[in-house]
Length: 111
Length: 114
Image (cartoon, rainbow over all chains, first blue to last red; front, side):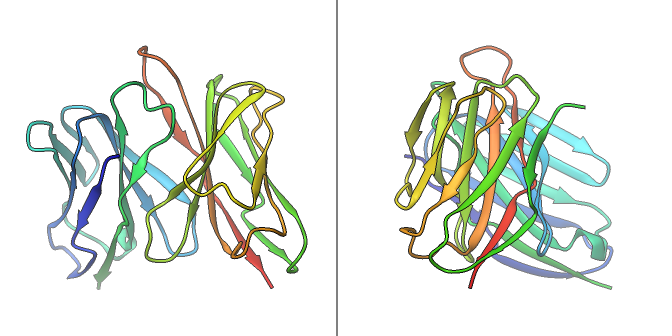
């Protein structure tokens, strides 16, 4: 079974800083998801990646399949970006038995 | 727009009562999933279903039950046998097979048992 590790576990930064959150996994995958969860709120899907890089607004997600590693970047961070960011992977073979999730990175952006 | 609807967003129950969480999707996805989140832990799989009238236990199925009578619906019942039912519950659905991959998440239900 895949092991998904996120770093850092907690991150506090000042508004405007460039943020990087990392995700590594142990077994080859067919897809990787980045999710956002606000305090007391639900889950929002940010990206689904199988290779390369995706960008949406100030968010950028990259994946390196050979190194089994993905990063989520936030440019010009803002207090509203404060949330838990979760990485999840889908293994080869369809993965119809579900995703494996990291424990999340708790991000606080201070004004 | 297609998506997953979980209701309610917040739910309170007394200890010893069964409670059913709703999950409905209109994406025509074959597979549906229930996950549980506890503080400081990653989401863990409770049950999943790849086809109507069939479902499989996940990693933490004890104290839970599900049904899949319709493709669109996958309700989760938290029974009184579940020792620590207070948690965040997330429903998801996906395509299956090797075709175009799609995975969609509900917004979750936060259950508090008092």
